[in-house]
Image (cartoon, rainbow, N blue to C red; front, side):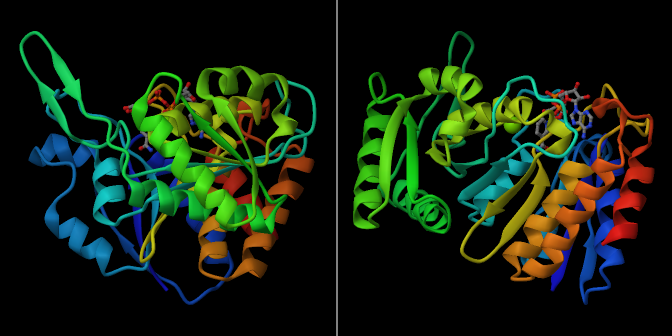
Length: 326
Ligand code: NAI
Ligand code: MG
């Protein structure tokens, strides 16, 4: 397997090397292609990502990604949004469950996955910035909705065979369209479903996270709900994600570049390390993926944690401790 490695900016440059310690410790036959993409590159060249970078990435099977700082430029177009579109990574899969010894803000057991449409919706990229107004076109297509609903149903089949469709169909026509396509796909797949308006979902997810299993939603709602879910699961530093298409995939922690803690060595590398586990699952190497998950559990059980979890260990130390156990 050939992977493009994009640490990006801020803590991306710290958590990705820690995740590579774990990947390297597995001794797999993997070729890594390092790529400098992001704010640092934008400052030097005026371009955060080039066509050549995209070409190099397309020569790899998948990408391990850290995080990118958004440059202070109103005309800047998000690198991740571009990558998700260029590689057609239409499914953003974000699992949430409690990890050992992690203090949670809400009580109760939960284990759910947010399946977020990743290439259209509010992040269509169709925007106009004028003197006195700005417009973003929210695009929801049948093809885009069908394929994300199919992905969610395929996942539901491996879990509790139930789907929660989250939308704002009471106000947005584009969302009643999305809802109708999703219910059709769920019926076709014999998957039971319920619907939830996104605002009510934001409320209920905090009170009753254990009620949910597979949640499917549009791009912006999935983005927001998954940061909320990260808070429910004990912090952004713990939550991995996979961006999956039919040909390529990109794996990344759901957090950003965290400029407030960048350079301190305090960033939690677990989200990035669990993103490597998701990458190995995607590649069919479930045995190695479970070995990473177990090593993460053991290190958390031993209270070897970064300051966000109350510990005093560094990003590198936690990465090494996990690498040692895989
Ligand atoms: P953020 O996720 O970088 O940070 C939010 C808060 O969580 C901060 O207090 C940070 O210290 C903490 N945090 C995040 N990851 C952590 C970790 N691994 N360990 C311990 N604490 C952690 O979000 P923020 O501050 O809104 O964005 C910072 C920059 O990152 C912005 O330029 C934003 O545009 C960019 N960003 C990039 C993303 C990406 O590349 N995928 C995603 C989200 C934001
Ligand atoms: Mg986000």
